[in-house]
Length: 126
Image 1 (cartoon, one colour):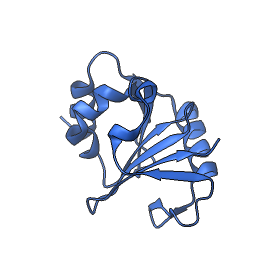
Image 2 (cartoon, helix red, strand yellow):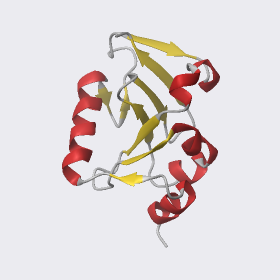
Image 3 (spheres, one colour):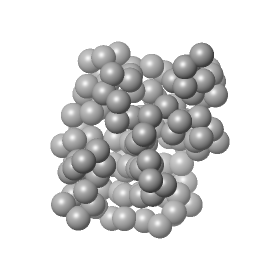
Image 4 (cartoon, one colour):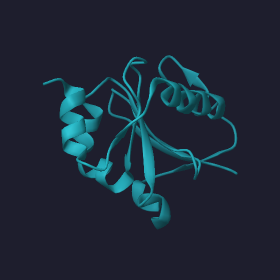
């Protein structure tokens, strides 16, 4: 079983695997709202963001919505799952590839899990 398959199993029945077209659309939104440099978000060049210190600072409505899971491996399909469920199995999610992003497109936020251990959270100033 691959790490991706283990991630799917850990996320359970509520997870959705996006098509290639839908995955590309999510990546386009992500790249149009966040400046990506060397496989991570360049927070200084990404404008219109409010950085926050912890996941607990995200509004409760965000913590219960669906989130897109993106990895730095472009061939890996994007997943859509409940944010709270993703956090419950985050080790399985981040094991899939070096860098992982949780993207709440509707609410305009991102959580970046960088392979060096950094976790950065930002909300777009909409």
